[in-house]
Image 1 (spheres, helix red, strand yellow):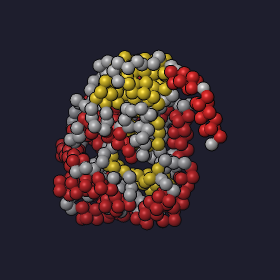
Image 2 (image 1 turned 180 degrees about the vertical axis):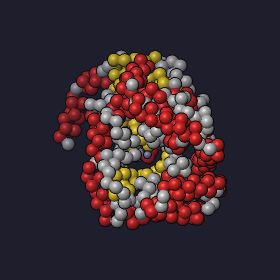
Image 3 (image 1 turned 45 degrees about the vertical axis):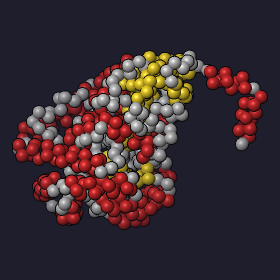
Image 4 (image 1 turned 90 degrees about the vertical axis):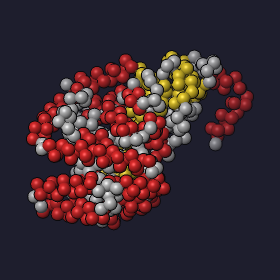
Amino acid sequence: MRLFSVCTLIAVISPGIVSSQREAKADLVITNIATVDTQGGATETRTVVIRGGTIDAVLAPGAAAPDAATTIDGRGKFLIPGLWDMHVHLATSPEPQFAERIMLPLFLAHGVVGVRDMGGPLERLLALRDRVSKGTLDGPRIITPGPFLDGAGDPDSMFMRATTADDARAAVRELSKAGVDFVKVQANLARDPYDAAIQEARARNLSVAGHVPVFLPVSHIVASGQRTIEHISPALVGDAGLLFACSRREDELREELMAIERERAKTPADQIRARESRLRAELVGSVDPEKAAALGRSLKEHRTWMVPTLIWSNSFRPLQQADTGADLPLDFIPATMRKRLVDNRARYLKSAAPEALTAGADTASVASKAVGVLHAAGAPILAGTDTYDGFVVPGFSLHQELQLLAAAGLSPLEVLQAATRNGALLRNAIDREGTVARGKRADLVILDADPLLDARNLFRIHAVVLNGRPLNRTALDGLLESVRTAAR
Ligand SMILES: [Zn+2]
């Protein structure tokens, strides 16, 4: 209160100080750029003034731009809010400094200014998040749940295990105290601990996001107020909660899914694998557009976001003989991992029966069609990749996911929204992020071509603005080179 009165006093008695502050040099001015409205899809030529990490003014053409430490000529370029990858894992790799040396620079170089981590070791994740927010580590902003909240299993620093409601409440209390941003639920959580986690999280003002637990139908998840549902493809059947709810045989196939889970420990692995592929085929063969549309309407009504992570499931196994991974930027993958991935893929392609490849391709195609139907019915959608996992390269894979969303039927504007505005809506941050407007955070991407004409243009990055600081193409290429060196 006292501070407020002093400031008011200064403003009253010495207007000169205030107006000279207003005229002070800007940090960054981007002149005459086509700003893209992520809400309605219009573009307008504007000059954008940035001070202290915030968009301070958006000026009409002809208005005098203030002096700036850096000025970028925006003619012929397009300005969008920075991208968010809404499903990543920053700390699941055993490689030391993997996030710092590989993932974070790759994200920035691909226009990713924010990531929603989806699970890993608590301390490591909180440290990464806090170093970035304090400015001692360069990278996209991070939100994280810390460890996965899951059912019974081996002790592991990436998991909190809850088999009873009390366990779940204690786990959520502990996570809340540690300062996580939300709670991530995983596939093996039973109904009682799931319900208890939802209640405890609500009491502590934390949202819940994650998988559809195998023992629960999607309808229960949606009614419980879980904010996002991850994955759609049954590349791993236990991850396909959304797709089960699109099947005309939902109840029967979920019975088999639960039976497999119950019998997993006491059944030979090859028998489990055979049952899982049978189940996958039956699920893929029974997806019903009417049922998918009904699910889409329900997701819309409850504001439950889907994060299909199509690129993860499409990268899980090759979908055709030509799919060797050679078209990926393999030099961004650390040498040890690269060799393992390339060798595994070559071995699979050599031994896979043609039917297995066809089944994989069918699965991908059905998952894509289901996303199209869900989206057309109004299901809110977010772009996420599940990087780092296999051939899902950080940053690069977000652009692959955006292409897959376009192929599933999203318009270029809807694709752009899935990676910008929608994440801000989910995080209740739309007043500060997700559009190019005065008062918003200056986390931006400058593109060489119009993303509303073709979502592929989101990949044509001229510069990134991170918290008001410009990273031009040379700086971005420098980041890529640093990753190549670290990966060698
Ligand atoms: Zn994940």
